[in-house]
Image 1 (cartoon, one colour):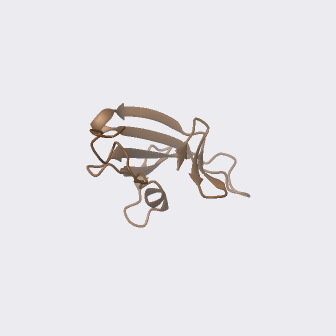
Image 2 (tube, one colour; image 1 turned 120 degrees about the vertical axis):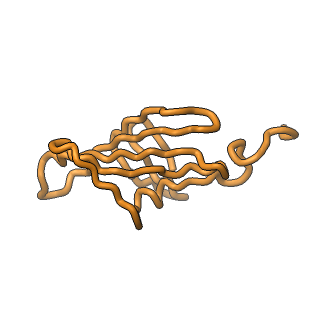
Image 3 (tube, one colour; image 1 turned 90 degrees about the horizontal axis):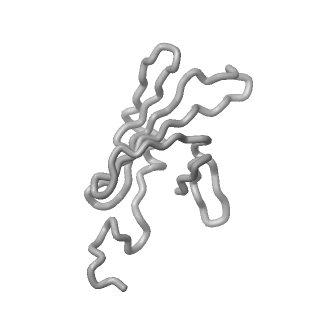
Length: 114
């Protein structure tokens, strides 16, 4: 997973795939209680409306085991303000539940490491 200013990408061994274009990030807290809100536009559907009229909001947070996982994922209707939340089988939640590969300071103490 790669979080860039202009997109969030899924990174595979030999290719990348854009998950969200032009996300806006808002750091809600740092350090041990790291939490970030990501606001993204819904993708354009061929033959659909020119403007989606809604946007997505994801809140990612550091978990006690050092992984990073979504706390919430909502779709907000820009015209009515109503919100829809996926409870089960949300592909964005599954894709953004992340754990560091190998040794990582979020998972273990740095003492004794060179």
